[in-house]
Structures are given as C-alpha cells and as structure tokens.
Amino acid sequence: MTIAFLMGQLDIVKWLTEKVDNKLFDMKETMNNACFMGKLDIVKWLTEK
Image (cartoon, rainbow, N blue to C red; front, top):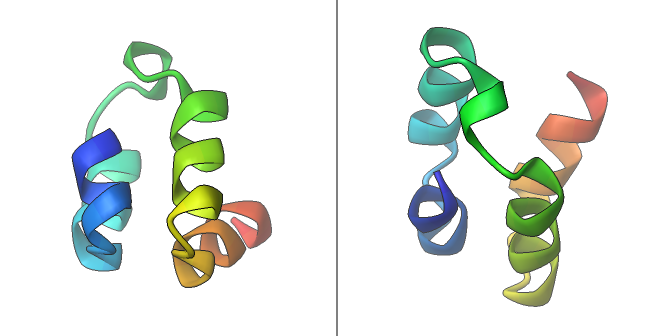
C-alpha cells in the first residue's frame, strides 16, 4: 500500500482499503509518507473515510 500512496494511485488505495485487511499495513507510516510526498488527495480521502 505504501507504494500506491507514494505513486498517488488513489484508485488502488481505495481498492486496497476495501479489499485487504488494513491491519496488515502501517497506516501511520503510509499517511506520513503520502504527506511528505505531497499526495494530499489520498490523505484527504483517507481522513474523510
């Protein structure tokens, strides 16, 4: 999921959050990385979810 965040692939991020157990991902790290890389559309979508 981290790679999807860093690449800015919102559609893949949405699919992963719906289909895969989120306990498998370190969401804090991926959110921090997305913020650092300027992928704010993904961060916004996740915080509103």
